[in-house]
Image (tube, rainbow over all chains, first blue to last red; front, top):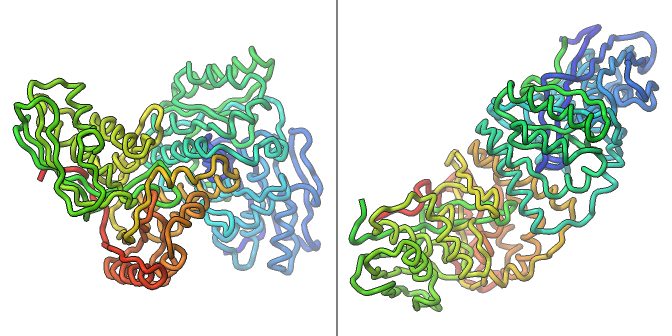
Length: 310
Length: 310
C-alpha cells in the first residue's frame, strides 16, 4: 500500500479546553496544514515551505515538519529520500496547534511513502518529537487529535497513553484568533509550579464534567465545565481584551469560553451553528474595539477523521 | 404518596476512586445502613440506634441521621414528629461512607413521610449537611452516590452540581476494610495545601481515564487510571500495611488499587468476580500478615439504585 507521492492534510486543534490543561484536545474541521511528499533519489529530506504567513522557519533544521520527517527516515532507513513541500496555512503561535498540524501532516505523509506503512497509533511519538522541538515540551494534546481526529485524552505522558474518546459530536466550537503571536514556551514559563489543592479539586471536577459532557453530547455541561481556575487566570494577561471578549461571547449565547491551547486564540461552546456565528461576530468586534486587534473566526464541529490523504 | 412508616436502606460507597479526590463516588451493592421512621405525635425527632458497632453516637444532637432529620423537620414543619430507629450496620471511620449512608437513609425516610415528598435530587443538600456535621467538610462524594446510586461526579461544590454518570456497570470492585478507624477530619488535616502543577496534570489525566473507562465499562482503563499521585502517598501512612496489601491485590490480578474515601478501606478493580474473590483473599491475608489487622472484604458491582425503601 505504499505510495510514491502523497498529499496530506492535518487539522488545527483546540487543546486544554479550559479545565483539561495538557491532557485533552479536539480536532477542528476548518484550518490546518498540508504536506506534499514524494520519494526522491536525493538522500534525506529535501524541504521547502509555501506560505503567506510570517516567521515560518523554512530550514530542514528548524521546521518541525522537516525535523520529524528526518526522524522517521533515521529510524526506518528507506532506500530513498523524501522531497517535501509544507503548505503552511496556519500562523504559528496561534493556540490552534500549528506546529502539531505541520508535524502530523509530515509524519502521515512520510509514513504513506514507507514500504510498510505503520498504523496511525504508531506515528504519534514522532509527531510529539516535533512538539518537543517547537516548544521544548513534548506535549501530545494537539498532535494526538490532529493525527487521530475526534477528542483525545492524554491519560499519561510517561508512558505516553492516549485514549480516543467516543464523543457525541453535537456541539459547535467557535474559534476567535486575534492577530498576535504567543510563543508556547513563553506561555509555559509564566505558569506557577505550585497550585492550591482546593483549586486542583475545582479543576478536576470541571474536567470530569467536560468529559462526561463530551461523551454525552451535552453542550450545557461542557460549557460550564470548561471553566479553568488555574491556567486561564495567569495566561489571560497575555491576551489583550481577554475578559471583554469572553464576556461578549457569553453575552452572545456561548455556554462556555476559554483559551485555546496556549492562546491567543479563544474558543467558545454552543449547541447551535447559528448562535456560533453570532458569538464569532461578537468576539471579533470586541477584539477590535477593546484591543484594536484584527481577528479571524470560524465555527466548527469536531473533525472526527484527523489527518487524511487528500 | 406519603406514608406513615417506612424502612430505607442506603448503601455504602467508595469515594475518590484514587484519582478523583473529592469529586466522584460509586454506590456498592453490599453493606449500608437502614433507617426505620414513622410519624409520631411527639414533637421533633425521637431517635434511637440499634447496632453492634462501637462508638456510634446515639443522641439526636450528635448522630448525623437524627441531625439531618431535624433539619428537614425544621424546614418543612410537618404537623407530626418522627420516631426514628437507625440500624447502624457500618462501622464509622471506615472509608466507605458510613456517615453518608446514615444521613441518606434518614433523609429518604423522612422525605417519604412528608405530605408532599420531594424528588431525590432535592434531598442531597440535607444529606450533605450531615457530612458537614460528621467531618466539618460538606463533601458530597459519598452522599450523592448513596442517594442516587451509580457513579456520581461532583462537578462543582459552589454551587453544588452533581452529574450522574451513564456508566457501563461491568467492573467488579473489591473492598478490604481493616479493623482500624481513621477519622475523616484527621485524614483531611494531613493533606498538603499546595501541590505541584505537574502532579495535578498527572492526576487529571488519570481522572479523565477513570471517567472514560467507567462510561465505556473498560476495566483495564479504569484500573490504571485510579492511580493517585497526590492524596494516596500522604494518606497511606495512616494505613498499616498499605503498600504490601496493594501489592498483594495487584499480584492477585487487580487492575488497579487505591484508598477508599479517607481510608482505611482499600478498593481494587477487576473485570471478573472470580478474580475479585481471589484479590479479596490476598488483601485480607496480607493485612493480617503484615499489620496484624483483621479485615472484612467483599466484592461488588456498582449499585445502580442507591437508597431505596425496603
